[in-house]
Image (tube, rainbow, N blue to C red; front, top):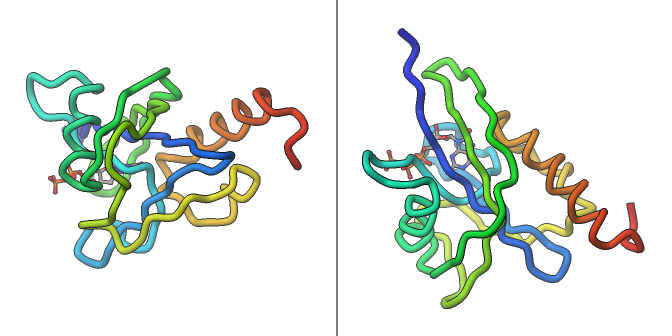
Length: 139
Ligand SMILES: Nc1nc2c([nH]c(=O)n2[C@H]2C[C@H](O)[C@@H](COP(=O)(O)OP(=O)(O)OP(=O)(O)O)O2)c(=O)[nH]1
């Protein structure tokens, strides 16, 4: 049976930009951008997993807000079910400890980097949500 991997990702928004993380050489899918986060451990809620992952990987504290998307994508190693939430940094400045790079990308440029395939529905959702909140923003 194909393995299902439950993963959470944080959509951190700041001044019209969204934080994207570049997977490093030591990680599977190196060179693709993703929302910071990781696998949900047994007994954790998705929100708890997200707080833990950002504490471990980005050395910052967040609060988790609204759900963005839950989508499944079949990779060759298994099916990733990715759940994303809007989130806010409440202390610390996100720092890359495992990723090759962290980048605050203007929402209008989000499509210009190569996202992990599982992230594409969430990226589109974020673009449309933030555009609705600020219709004056350049398209
Ligand atoms: N964190 C994250 N992982 C994603 C996203 N999109 C996507 O396809 N993935 C995939 C990549 C990996 O196969 C899997 C998450 O694994 P991971 O290696 O980041 O998780 P983890 O930090 O818990 O890893 P580990 O402790 O098992 O090494 O989900 C995303 O936006 N964020």
